[in-house]
Image 1 (cartoon, rainbow, N blue to C red):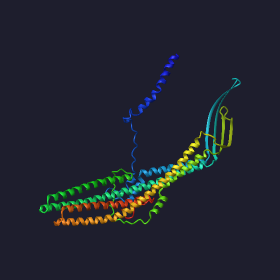
Image 2 (cartoon, one colour):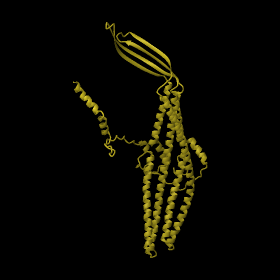
Image 3 (tube, rainbow, N blue to C red):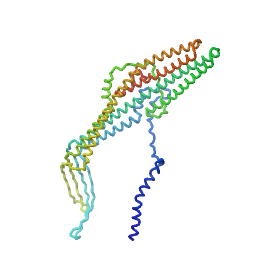
Image 4 (tube, helix red, strand yellow):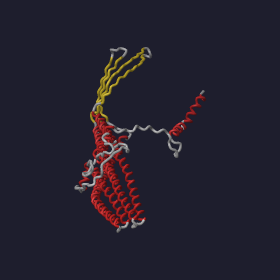
Length: 473
């Protein structure tokens, strides 16, 4: 019998190393070269935009202003919704930490049965009891632990609120950038159509001169090549409009295929030189940038966490109190009461070096958070400096591009007149038209670059401006 019982025991121990291996093999690919073919987790239903918000977007064909786009994005974008919910969670964390300043009261009800023999079984006592009661535990005094915990939670709440502010400003900048890029793409299409029209005129002029016997077939082919190239550029620009429009819709938190129409890129920008020095703008960014303030708040939270860990090893004074009544169910009128209260001085002595290790970890994390804040500040200074230089450069480029467009337009008109009069070559005309097309595209891009650079500088300095003066509203 004993041998029969030993056999399954030995078999069980022999299979013990095999069972986990077989289970693991069934849960992962059989080899590194194979892909996992298990069932994918179910995808959550896509979040649908609020119909009331979607109704704020005008129907296709009706331009929507930049302010309307920003207002819609702030209400609908998932990024701001996420940071807002995170801030609410952090606020609940502050309330949770402040609960340490209140007493903790617990109630309990205990039902029991006991059997007792007395005198070697001569007497037997069976007893049923019901004992309701309550206990109170109240931390009267500690050396800064509760305050540090509350301070950490409050700093994390501030960081969460500042993170929301930074997300709002980042979202505004993304919408502004997508908006101006969309305006630029539409303007490039208009510029491309004008270039095609001029190339068509040159082609017709070459045909007329060839029919009149004063031009060669080479002139016609060169003009036709120029026209085909202009059509290719126009088609590419038209495709870019659809792509940029999808990016604008995505920045609003809606599908890319949602029709969003905007106005036109302003022709005459009110370009005003920056009056503030870059040093003043850097000081403004240091005082207003929410992401920098968030990094500083996180450093404060890490410092408070270090103080909280340090207080673990300090004495604390605790009040314990309790009250209960013991009902003897064999006799419903019999009961006994118990009341107690005590003030306890807790003095931590040794816990396996856990607090020392946790304190070291918290101290290093606090120093790392301070270094992160310094790194963010340096990056912000670089951003302001770069944005400031970009705006200054864009200011100069706006004037230069206008002069370039005017001279290219005059040159193209002269070349076209000379060719029609028979004193100019087709090569001169096509060269002038190519220079004019490039000048138009550059002038459009420079206008958009100036608008984007002003919006970027506004963001980098911490100012939440909706749009620079002179932009399309």
